[in-house]
Length: 289
Ligand SMILES: Cc1ncc(COP(=O)(O)O)c(C=O)c1O
Image 1: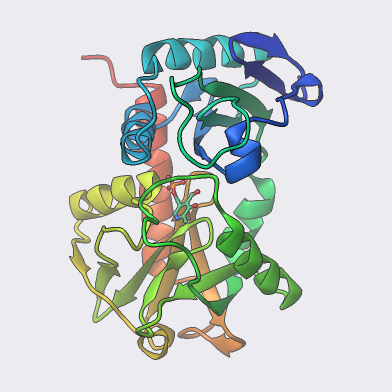
Image 2: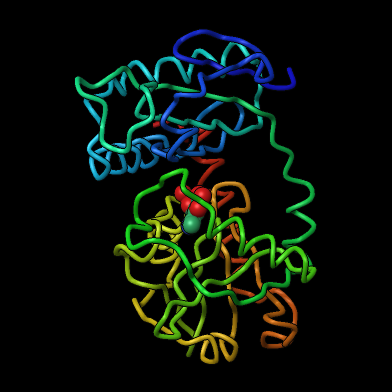
């Protein structure tokens, strides 16, 4: 199947899904989302994604939402779609009410959208072999980047600038000249033989893939340190890595047109990617006890 949507509990092809123009997601970007990777029909890091969704909803003071029902609907949509390798897109808005900035009073039911789509890894698999180019770009986002809201205009503009420059991602640089993360992926780098990552906090989204990979890295003998770096410092790193739900681990080998290290993906990226895939395989087919 091409894709399958579940809008407020009703299954339909995505292009038949409609929301009213008074939907607050449409009007204000008053909405949160998650994207999960489906391997062999199963949702990877489901608990982590829904924990983050719960935090996003709480940060935006959404009225109580039945997440158990949402998860059950997601599983049913995956099962009906028959999609084995794909993504699950979850989108919740504060609902439909005549346009007014303040929350609707009394609260209205949220709009709930789930979209299951096939995902094909071969393009990214090739990029993992070659590495990719990135540009730097000012981080113009708001001060709650830890909330996974659909307000993504600053990310959209930065990624568009990257694509126009022939690059695959934009590394965001804050007003102090320190790198935060990328437009839709987390950023980790290697310096002095160890992994380093920006501290969690309001300036970055706590990536589920980054979180899992940093724990996994420690298990395979690659502990990490928390650090902040300037763009110039990042350019001298031994490896610069992007991490995310669909890309998994991807090396940046050119930054603003300058080669990173020897211009090829490094050994730590390969070790992490192999360990990641091995962890997914173990989860899909656990050893009998
Ligand atoms: C700004 C940003 N950082 C990091 C990530 C990576 O998060 P995850 O690993 O949960 O996909 C995303 C994913 O959408 C993102 O939008």
